[in-house]
Amino acid sequence: MKNSKAISILGTGSDVGKSIVATAFCRLLRNVGKSVAPYKAQNMSNNSFVTKEGGEMGRAQVVQAEAACVEPHTDMNPVLLKPSADNCSQVILQGKASGNKLSTEYWGNTDYLFGKASESLERLKNKYEFIVMEGAGSCAEINLRKRDIVNFRMAHKANADVILVADIDRGGVFAQIIGTLNIISPEDRKLVKGIIINKFRGDATLFDDGIKYIEAETGVPVLGLIPYFYNIDIDSEDGVVLDARVKSERTFENEKIKIGVFKLPHISNFTDVAPLQRDASVELIYLYHPEPLDSFDLIIIPGTKNARFDIEWMRKIGWESHIQQYAKNCGNIIGICGGFQMLGKTINDPLGMEGDVGSTTGFNLLNVETTLEENKTLAQVKGKYLYNNTIISGYEIHLGQTNIGDNCNSIIRITEMNNKEAQHFDGASNKEGNIWGCYIHGLFDENNFRRTILQKLKPSAVVAKATANDVEIKEFKNKQYNLLAQHYAENMDMIKVNTLLGI
Image 1 (cartoon, rainbow, N blue to C red):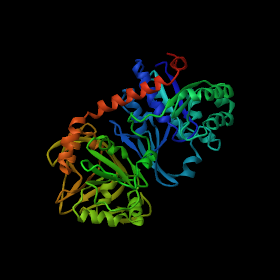
Image 2 (tube, one colour):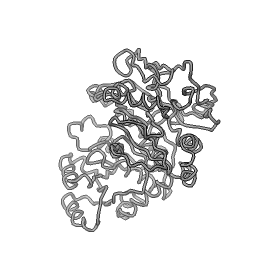
Image 3 (cartoon, rainbow, N blue to C red):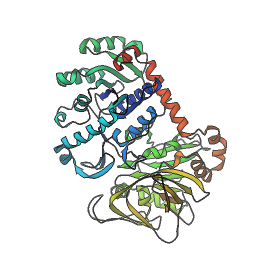
Image 4 (cartoon, rainbow, N blue to C red):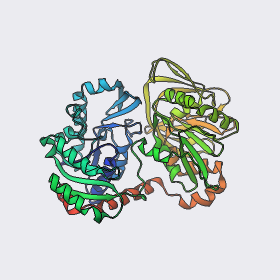
């Protein structure tokens, strides 16, 4: 049994940068030779991943595991809530779906979930020297304190020192920090051993008096004032960041490949398109408000936790006519997972998995029909893209199966699922090949596959730009994690930090 130590990264609110701080600490500890695992007892996100064991977990902890150079495991995120409506989420418990619950049902009794999350924590503590824990939302939600399984309750369980994270960019940082510490219980406050202030812009010396004031008022040391960064690319936890990428006015560079991605209400696994965003030959825009699509070389309908709801939303606000016109003009369309289902004729839901029992008409751009089922497909897969036999890999997370009709071609042959040999097809395209979809997430991480798709769209742009900037995804990510760790190390008092960590 390891003599493990835990630190808990809690926030004054949502989107203050807890995930990024936890990621930085995972890499900092790894860089000094420590074995470290990330941990978030309960995550709420539709951005998920499939582990080698075939379990489902939130991608934020996958990112943190990558930073720690360890294999992601569902114990790192034992409870995952995947919202399918405003007041309903699918509950993933230790990697497996355990049904949909209304908010009132979920919060009615969390003791069982706390027990299961504690089991996962103990397994990690027995394996790793350090556990970097992450909280959720504000750690000072006093109305939820007794039912909390992710913030102070779990920090007490782990005997963890707490670092409180605040966001100065949104304003009111003094109220964030002092207010949080003033309304939490004395028992919880004793755990708070340091403060990190994120997203600072400007001359840091101008905030020296602010740091002195915070330390004098709280008695808690400020470990760091972290400048806002622009040059470090870390996958985001949820869709909040997408709002900044929705543009209504276009200033496209003519030589670039123009890709539009629909920002769906229940968008999931939007990190699928991150490699396209990073490609020098691509200009990628998220689409929200209906507009003509003629200026795009490709549009992508991404994954969604509720394909039936999201396709009706697209119809209601006016997207369908633009999509149909774009397809009529031989535009290129890709659907991923739920987006693949939406391209078909019908989504049948005999069990009411995504709403009322019934069927929802698709865009009818592919002759395929989907039937949603109770059991979810979870698998890491490998195979070949049949257009040119390019090797592909990724993972599947979906409810239901899709049957392919006439006038469709298979596009991917699956040769391996969860490290076992397999022989079946995935996805479908129309006869012309400009419209296709499949269930595999992470396809564009494969450089050869990504280049194949982009070369089909605009060969000159890829030759001119992408080949000179083609970096393996793993190498790219590793560089970003090192840059992140360096950024935090340079802007924290590392003597205070190392004393807190006991290293």
